[in-house]
Image 1 (spheres, one colour):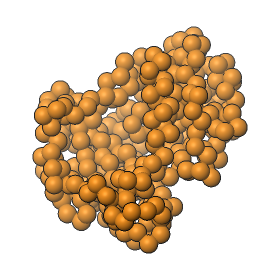
Image 2: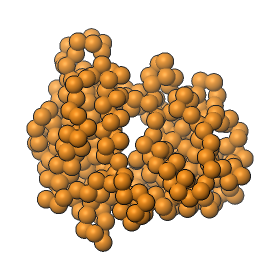
Image 3: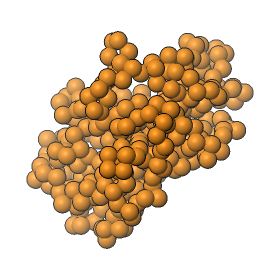
Image 4: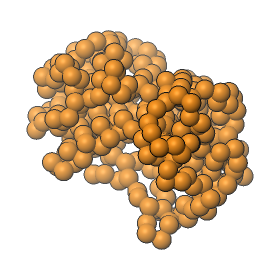
Length: 328
């Protein structure tokens, strides 16, 4: 069911269209310059690499064949979050949001993409001293973009298992910050699920409440109400999550933010994951228990369809989400 493409041994990467893209020739932004990917390298002693002291964003841009335009999704919101989260790691003095958006647009434009794209900005500790700390260390910015399709089957629905690995607590490694080192926690959860035959993991807080998936927020639907955990339950402050609230309001679907017990999900009418990477992925099974009879439910389907129209510029109600990207 997984459709995520990986880089080949010869340095090419299959694009969503099936064409091979030479990744090392793609233009990136690295430490103040636009350079080919092959020249965007960090040393093995770099603190961000050695200790995982970095924050990042995952951003998508969607190709609209009708308009002949690539639309960047929620660029400003992602760059605002990147700046906030960098501050948690004592990395300040970043370019303003408008400049960060300009850099992202320019990287995508220079590569001349005419297909869906994934964009990854990161702010990382760029010093090379041996020893782990946050203060007194230099930091820098990089950003790359690559062709990218779906990495889960967003139409058929996915299966999940409750992970034995708990979510990092906010007073350990805050999930809201998208800290690279914290994603080891998510990697344990994701691999456990896949090696046991499931597509994704449901992760619990240290107190046993449902938190999120390995790297996605979740919503459940009971009696027509859209329900999701609060940000205080160790979840990422998701930008797609906020978008789901917007769509629900437009559709007249009531919403509720509250703690969710693990077993309550077993009796949910519907459930779906959301995030920039996973997009909107309906869940049809959890711990071998069918959700909503094992089929994608009507509210999930409606939100899903509106979302995918919105990100491609096909729904005028959500045009404010989009940044048109000029062709090279």
